[in-house]
Amino acid sequence: MIDRPYGAVRNINIIDMYRTHTCGELRIGDAGKEVCLAGWVQRVRKMGGMSFIDLRDRYGITQLVADETSSAEVNAAAEKLGREYVIQAKGTVAERSSKNAKIDTGDIEIRLKEINILNASATPPFTIEDDTDGGDDLRMKYRYLDLRRNAVRKNLELRHKMAFEVRNYLDAHGFLEVETPVLVNSTPEGARDFVVPSRMNPGQFYALPQSPQTLKQLLMVSGFDRYFQIVKCFRDEDLRADRQPEFTQIDCEMSFVEQEDILRLFEGMAKHLFKTVRGIDIKEDFPRMTWNDAMKYYGSDKPDTRFGMKFVELDGILKGYGFTVFDNAKYIGGICAEGAASYTRKQLDQLTEFVKKPQIGAKGLVYARVESDGSVKSSVDKFYSQDVLAKMRDAFGAQPGDLVLILSGDDAMKTRKQLGELRLEMGNRLGLRDKNKFSCLWVIDFPLFEWNEEDGRYYAMHHPFTSPNPDDIPLLDTDPGAVRANAYDMVINGVEVGGGSIRIHDSKLQDKMFRLLGFTEERAQEQFGFLMNAFKYGAPPHGGLAYGLDRWVSLFAGLDSIRDCIAFPKNNAGRDVMLDAPSVLDDSQMEELYLKSTYIKKN
Ligand code: ASP
Image (cartoon, rainbow, N blue to C red; front, side, top):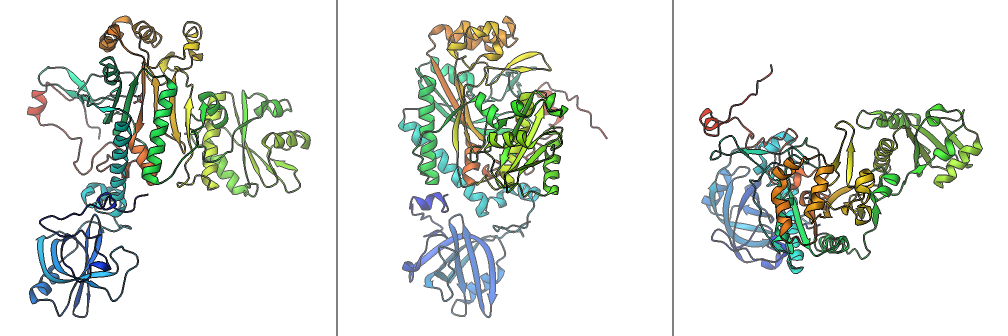
């Protein structure tokens, strides 16, 4: 983790008109130097006739001292200072009598000769300290003050460093950064669009890009065979910890490549980031797991592989003994939590409550403890003999002291997902999800389509430009649900940090794809005619990927939410509470844009 500001890491000397040094720079070797610093007053302490002032900038904190040897002006100015005043301070570097080992400049102080108050400050609404007394809402309202705090500032420095290393790596591999427009067209496939009315084209709207997907593909047609862009993308979705309405992608595309080329190059980039940003040298290739296996063993397409607890299917062992819940189930599966046999009744009840939560939706939970003599004590003992339970125990390789947790259901996929949630919960409870440990993998062979029960139609699992696995093309006509895509995700610690695919570059196949997705010929033409048309003029084979910069940064910073690695994020209601956006427009502005609101405020 970088614990020093980026400028300081590179040993850049910052000398401006206002200062000779930063507040993080001076050491004992500088004693005797006449210096000039500028920054914010963190705090002022008075002791006897002396004033100690902690002066802060983004590089650190330096102690300033005014005492009886200082001039009357200096002592008068020191009297006036309050928290967050901006000052310029001139003086001599001196060794401190009581040193502070906690800060880099803790061996020295500045004996003041001059203080210039550059700007006064109102009392800040919360303390600008690591452990601030400000709540979330207040910190967001005054985000510019929050950003003065180390914790938040460090995340932005980390973000800068990561973006910088991304550019380094991609530039060294021949990629060109090309900007694509922010005002584009709405494409209903995928998430909801943010739209922008066009004054010059009455009644018409632009959309903000959900990703530059089609544009980067057009750049491939243009011959820019290695493209990237660190780009804002916009999706009008309900917000979660790892989602913001605007977020940043490291968007990449390459021509004349196969999936293998892309996986290698971007695995290389991941390793480059680990090494240059976190100092972690990953030598081994990232494991690759098929989507089928990810679902079968982890119940998730983004498995957290920092710990095992792989699913074991128990249909063959536990069916047919009169326990109707299992006898009627389409799927029975379980996990083995090592050393958790000591769980109390209360803890087991909590787990049952957990799986029954509406977001998870399981009906109940069966558990089995492996006792110290190897025998099994379960919540369904009356249906099963020790022989059967021992078979089950052995299927997990469970040892004395382990706890087996079992879910069943009539929909295998749903039950696996529920078991996947339970696995993560157990991982949390058993402390197996260490933020300083990283486990990376590729999930490959995603299905091309996802069936939607409600609409009774297929949706593209990745997006409609993803190419089917060539081996499965015949299945497009007979069994579309079984077609595998040439699509891949990179997953780290259960977070999807990026994903992409080999694209369709043949206009006929693209046309067929749109048809399978329920587009009429007219609608496909209307929305994607430009792309299919471009494909008629020599589209090279191509593919790419996008990494989520915010997710990468929060992973490296050890944050649970992407919010604190974004300078000015939105809250969970999609609002910027500092700017008070979004907001109502003036009538004249509405008129100019040919808009009328149909919104009626409910009381
Ligand atoms: N455009 C895709 C996305 O935003 C990534 C890709 O396929 O390159 O998920």
